[in-house]
Amino acid sequence: MTESIIASWVAEAKQKLKEGRLLASDMDELLSVAGATGRRRQRLLYLHAASPNLHSPLVGGALHEPVAGALAQIDPLAPELPYNSVHDAILHGWRVIHFPQQLAPYHDREIDLIGYEFVLEQLVET
Image (cartoon, rainbow, N blue to C red; front, side, top):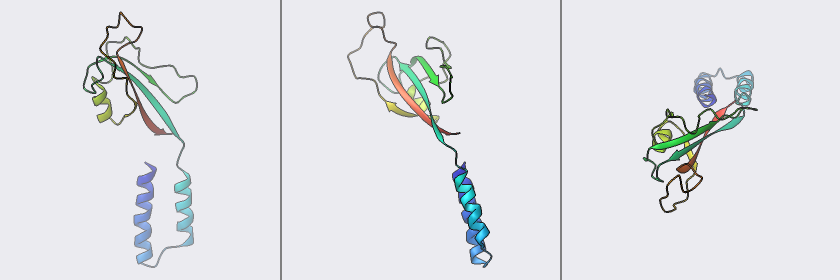
């Protein structure tokens, strides 16, 4: 969002410069726009898939928001997840920051894990 504001300001400033109307106050305005950038915070999305394949169906997940005291917003056992696969989440702007270990297949009842865990992030301005 801030990038588009700065790009717009630069386009306007180029026109003013071309016309000889660029002022010191315009530079002050740029500083205030550039300083308006908020802090970036990381949203985390844990997705548990049936296999280590990005297109594999999901079996669970949890969304962690960058807010003090926030709890996971997705029940790991909920039937309705926001995405059908890790690939779907990537298409929606999430970035994978952790891939599951490529271990041999296992059954959930034999190990205390839910599927293959992918950790994804989105950076948001605050």
